Image (cartoon, rainbow, N blue to C red; front, side, top):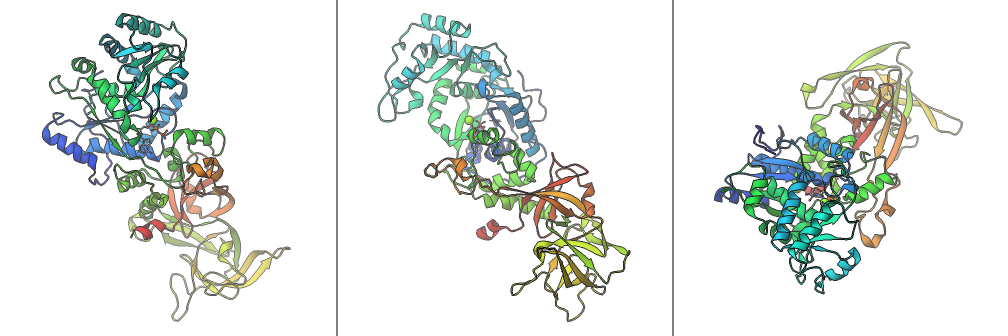
Length: 585
Ligand code: ATP
Ligand code: MG
């Protein structure tokens, strides 16, 4: 493979996210300064295609692609596909789509650890020949027992001193498919007494007679992650291999494997982007993973929610997946800004979900046009508005951004307001509509409620009001109008469905082991589907994924999958109230 044909060597396309310093950028600056990698910065994002990406992955994506971009470097996308049973092409496709949606593009072609299987096999032979790996025939249970634990050292396998010749013979036959799953494994010969369990002769190859989504039935043996990852990094001439803190204890193994292979053969197997003299082994650097309260962030758990039907698929708008957030109405910029704000450090912490919500509000407040949608319609008839008459009001699309233009809104005798904006017996200081009181309709006239029409159960079904035709856009002198409410014209309003989302979990830490299974704290009210909502007619032409601020209700977007011209569906992205901005200011 040759990556030198990639003319565009930036880590991402056209996204500008403010850059704040962190310890990784510091290390890279030092390396650039010392000339360690001959001025190159090469990172990679290495997802396993066993699920959809979540917001935690976004942190890693922004870090890896952003670091490359900031240093005129490259960032590869490499599928870390050494576990074929759990992986699939569907996940590969979704991961590529999510990275592109976030605004990043990888350098050159897509890489797969599986395309290095041949090279990985050759390097395993090299370790065997050097007496640094052996075929072990303990059963998986025995191997576990021999490994010891944190307080007791491991014991050497009785197969540890097999001859090089026998090891080569057995390993080649493992590859030829002669043995069944679990009968043998290839292990690195390191140190069974090491305090670091990862160094106690770790398994580097196992037998698995399963088909692989990329390599088909070619391989009955598969390399382990720890073995494949460092060599894949070396093959791709990665300079800085950025990963999360749980890999810190694996770093000695990462280094051991690379240091025990012949460097010039690693270079010979590499992308060839450096000369041999400039070739430097990659360095693993760990950072703290992103955790968010009221959220679970493990693919295994997210998959369980999908498979067991607690949510409607990986892209359910309540999911912390990138495809879920996208469908919910999050913008790529809001997620990139969130990741930048969270920052990169080595200490574990839990980020308040309010900070994520703040990022999307900040973006949508600036970028989304205003519109009106009545969620619980209550009819209003203006008895002094002439029968059959109507007029067209012009309302700005945005209170500040005049460049966003204006929209037309028909106004006539019959309207809908929200039932929540009317109280027959109002509490003190009530600022909405009640019998005898006045309120302004947004962008239109002041009205007064004169009569309530009720159904048999005593519920108001219609308000008879009067309007003051001297109040269009002005408050006559000395007149105090308590509040402003939103409305839509009755005849022209669109019937829409609105989906109101709340947190998927009702407990701050769903993973808290003392609190039982995380699924027990699923919020039963995380989805409220409201049908029969009435939206202003200008929304008829809104495209899938378009976002709006529905006045007084929050930010909403057109559902990209379920919304049709006949039946528009809006997802509430987030409410208007920003608690995080207040806390943090
Ligand atoms: P999960 O723990 O959710 O199953 P994973 O680590 O197994 O995720 P990978 O596909 O291996 O998923 O992740 C690809 C990259 O994303 C890895 O480098 C990993 O360190 C990083 N990553 C995964 N989760 C987070 C997170 N919460 N915060 C930051 N980076 C993460
Ligand atoms: Mg992983």
